[in-house]
Amino acid sequence: MLSMTPDVVDFRSADAPARFTESLRATGFAVVTNHPLPWELVESIYAEWDAFFTSGAADAYTVGEDNQEGYFPPKMAETAKGRTVRDLKEFFHVYPWSDKYPSEVSRDAFRYRDIATEVASTLLGWVDAHTPPEVADQLSMPVAQMLEGNTRTLLRILRYPPLEGDVPDGAVRAAAHEDINLLTVLPASNESGLELLGSDGEWYAVPCDPGSIAVNCGEMLDRATNGYFPATTHRVVNPLGEAALRARMSLPLFLAAADDVVITDGRTAGELLAERIAELRSQD
Image 1 (cartoon, rainbow, N blue to C red):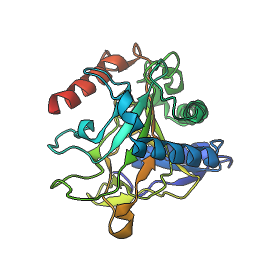
Image 2: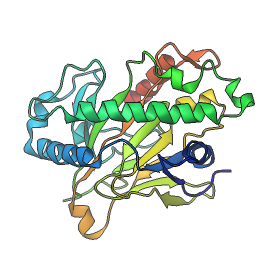
Image 3: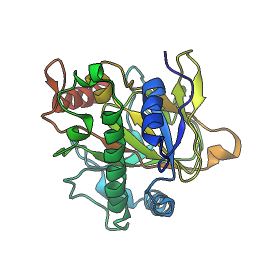
Image 4: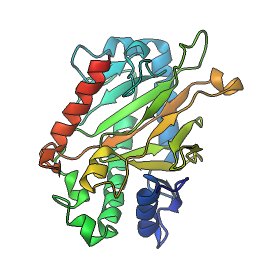
């Protein structure tokens, strides 16, 4: 049974590793404060990429057919699994091997990615240290080691535009979904809206205090541990009132296991990721 809300954990406290791991186990999420990721860096990236998207310059970097690197305009945004209406968002994908990066913005996004990856590696080390032996014995290797040599970790610079004009029936900023990767690191947005689905079927807001980061399990971690660390369903709801007229910026870093890492039933991380991408494309 999942608890309702994630724990807020001080990265530097002595009990942080145990509390963080327990929150992931109970809710699929944890919120971390007092961590090494500079908040002023996040705010700077939000500001310059918001300007980049609104200027129209992103159009020059639009992804091609069967490509996952570059700019996804609103008309190419994802349709969540089981949905028929696209999410209300636009975003830019940056992979470790990316050579399509805008000249109009600074390299701060790469600095953010490197620091966030180090934080995530520490957090996964905490998970390894506090996973029961009977669960750890199911793993093909410790989860922190699953990141080594991966080329799939994805930085998504994400903008939810203001809700102006006619919004399609049933369209939301991000429909209910689970992440496919191992772990997601998500700095607090400039606007609230992230919710997780509780075990009682109700939706609960994920804390969004400036400077904090939300961390959640993906399906790779869920499957590798046979559900011990659940990939919790989450969404971003449409705001009301004046908030609806403001853009929402977000910087999720989706940390994937290396392609050849066996996740479950002999299936590798690369196979699971390819399956999810094919599902999303079939819906489009």
